[in-house]
Length: 346
Picture 1 (tube, rainbow, N blue to C red):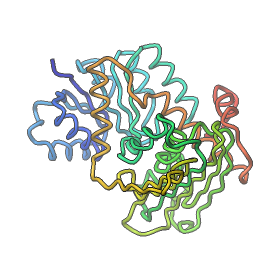
Picture 2: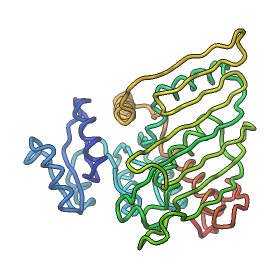
Picture 3: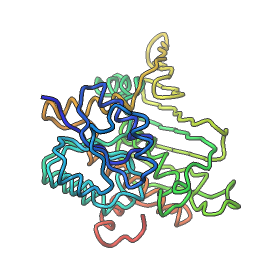
């Protein structure tokens, strides 16, 4: 029996997930968006779904009247209210894009709701699906990589993006909305960060009205495995180019990665030293949706459930909190404790 999916958010990611779901033989039964232009564009993209897929402007109405097994949430950060929690309480399995929320306290509520409902969840950290990351996971699991040493990651772009993206109260900022992918990858491969020091500023966009997010940032942390992680980002780089790269140093292998499907592995403890190149083209967004659908069908949890989304949210929240204190160290345990009622920042 086919799985039935509802989609919340009909923009670019909603369309991308629609293509993935259809390729995976999942029946799309409903789409919801309060933006009429966006939902019109959705059905112009998929004209064969017009009159077949129910369209809604109100999420609660869709939740009540739609018999869907899964829900794909592709909303921008500011549009997240309690849709995840209400869908979890209704027993829907949920795929949600990052960041899962703008505030850690809300993320904690979401994790609690998912655990109480015992639903299957997945967060769209698509970089985890890359061939380079999968190779590293294998080397780490087998012990061949050795101890984690250094994660040095860079993110660069140069765009005004959409109006909501430029407003911190709506997007959370570049660290929250974009660079969280690298923060997530760092903790996934090198261990949980303990204390974060971060600086950020608006260097190139101070004259742009309503541009309240950072356009440069750099964070450093030490993980529970003893590794150092440094992540830098800017929106002042090359126009029209979005770049994500990292160097991953382990005791026995060093990886120079220009993209999660492209890297050179150098096995530094082999005699003689050996290198291996990974260079492939894979759709990591599709692979993330595919894993989610497979897990729902097999009734098992995904490799990146909502609890992972919360941990990475806590990481970026700690980075932002540090920057707001001129780079003072912020403990992840403090973020976890305070966001349950005492901490008033992100």
